[in-house]
Image (cartoon, rainbow, N blue to C red):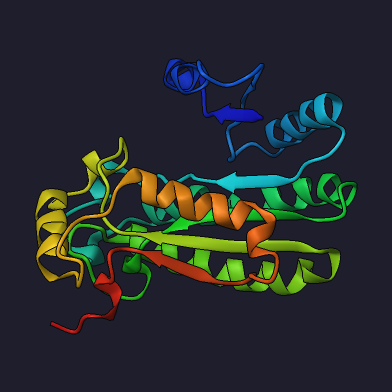
Length: 223
């Protein structure tokens, strides 16, 4: 397994995740740097001579753009959010595809959120980025399906993560979710992980181009 981190500032967090793994490869990967992405996959190719799974779990927006009026989103903030959170899936899949074909195919999984379709106050530009990301999932699934490469997304309910801490009103979002979801609770990190494992495995061999909700049923509710 290879784990990527953006820069040295975040390397320590990823190292902690890797403690219990067997001989993992840790690589620095800034997805806004095409040369850096090429270097990462060169290392992966050298180490593994192929690739089975790619998990794209990346999102970023300027703090000032997560809260307040959406219409005040600046041009640069819009570009950064869409570049990191959505566009990054394209070069990663392009680079991963030849390595997956060596194994007879592969699976790509990315992370989205219902704000791609509904308004979550405070999520702002990230909702736009997630909408773009989900469209990419469908287009990439169509493009790479003939190579037996599947592309899917998990739409998880509110979870406490490092990224979530920067979202204005996140605690309210989580509280409302638990109150209105048919299962009357929030989801867990483990439930998202189990769905990711399903999508990464051959158990989902006929699933591609899908956005799978893991939200205790919240997405079906109107009120």
